Length: 129
Image 1 (cartoon, rainbow, N blue to C red):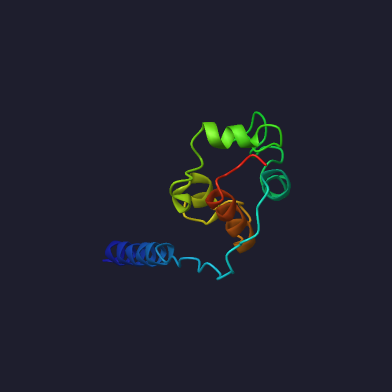
Image 2: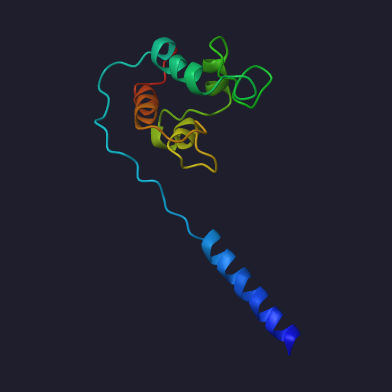
């Protein structure tokens, strides 16, 4: 009898743990005005990568792909298919920064300004300017 009570308690605890771990709330993406200014890869996009992405152990030379260091970022994004200028919101890079991939980028959390700047750059043709 004591063994059955312990098993029931254990199952109850497991049920509570499983139900709590299953709770997930989608992030609500903040509404931000679309960017209509021209976005420069060199000044706008590289500055995002320098501040959030290409530090040691992350997206640097020899780190996790893509290599987002200033001399390599553009070629790494384009040649490895991270950009889809025909469907910008389906671009791999945009999906990461908008939190639609497994781990949002940057890992500190999604940021509306970063997300909209990158989307505007892709919509403008993802130029190496």
